[in-house]
Each structure stands twice: as structure tokens, then as C-alpha cells.
Amino acid sequence: MTGGGEEQRVTGGFIRSYVITGGRELPSADALSLITLVTVAPEQELPALPSPETRAIWELCSGGYLSVAEVAARLELPVGVVRLLLTDLIREGRLLSRSAPPPAQAPDPRLLEKVLHGLQLRFA
Image 1 (spheres, rainbow, N blue to C red):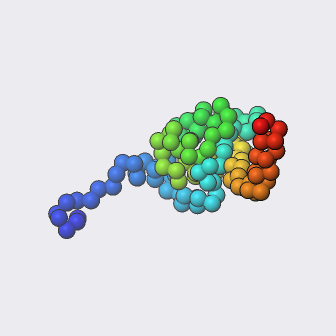
Image 2: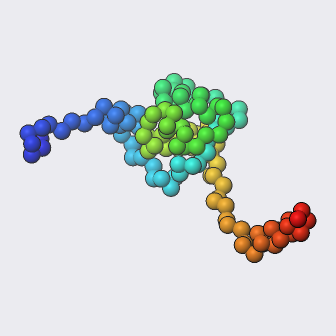
Image 3: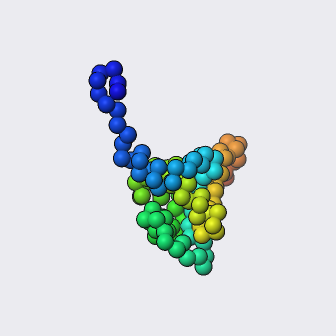
């Protein structure tokens, strides 16, 4: 009970997440980042007796690569829960994961100036 006499309740979302994960500890963000891409591995089949969440992940990822964030958003599940389910499928060899490409590096300003000067000479 809180100081105001109101009872604190555990939300249904929390209980649902606990049930989906079987109470297991969620993986760290380092294991699968939000921008890690996942897809169904070639020649793999849906696990026998999949949970509704696993079936939904399978159907989503069968269409090509999606980010972890996209999968979580489309399933309307917490990212940690989705990370755990994806990690299980990756460990089983059913899904492939691919890190997102590294962020682009800013080009050397001197190189850009040379290109601009060359374009000006050619087309001016």
C-alpha cells in the first residue's frame, strides 16, 4: 500500500511478459541491439508447438530482414522480451542476425572542396 491508501497493482503487461519469458532473465542490450537485423534462416521450419509470440516472430521475419525494434513494435511487446525470444531462435539456428552497418564517417572537407571545385570548373 502507498502512503495515500491506494493499493499498488502489478499490471497485466508485466505478468504477460513474465509468462512469455518463463521468468528467465532478459538479455542485455549488447546481445541484440535495437538495430540488429533478423530474418528466418534458409531451409528452417517453425519450431514444433511454437508459442503465439514465436509464431508471430516467424511470420514477421519470413518476409526479410527486420530490426529488433521493428519486431518489438509490430508485436507490441517490450524490447527485452523480444530480445529473449529472438535470442532463443538464433541459438537454435532458426533465425539469422546481422549487425547494422557502422555509422557513416563524415568525409574529409578538403576532399569535398576539391570535388566542388572540379564540378565548378567542368560545368561553370
